[in-house]
Image (cartoon, rainbow, N blue to C red; front, side, top):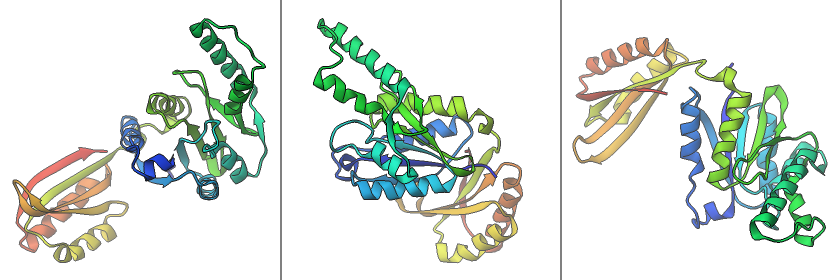
Length: 273
């Protein structure tokens, strides 16, 4: 079976509306470019108990999951600690992360024209950003060298932790996908074929939808109602999606079913997923 991809987005600032999440649409884009699809996404605030519970489910799932946010070293950053708790392991300063963070501190000192003081309190504190669960592997950060980390889970799954800043997170996500999962790219091409049913009602279409799913598994049927479209007025976008090899037969059957019930149809749409 093809592994599922998931996304966890951590941060009170998203739930409060202070910042608008940009990770979800970008992650969908990054996956789609590689012939992959997102199965689910979770939003969670800066609540350690809730983050831990979310990560416990993630590690138990066997899925490939990316988590954004909360891996810094300020009091409202809890993700690193929660990941260790969810795995039942200790935290430790990762040796590669320590090297990279010290390099970053030296870079900052040079940029500011000041001497590098490794034992200065703020520099010692910065090393906390490299304290990861035991057994973690680093994810390089091309923006400022402060790494993220990955933790393996059962059944070949893993959770990959990156910062909340898009300028850092997105290239780090791409690096993980391209380094660790190229064998999954474009392995199961998906397609979506739909048509606008003008003036249609979902209750009338439901028996047809149920039959198509029953007779053409693993194809999935979907309906997207619209009540005030400026061109087509009230309508339903009705379609089938799934493996490219089996969708065409389901589509022919769906169109025949719409004809048999006298549905008024409009434009057709095809999309590769």
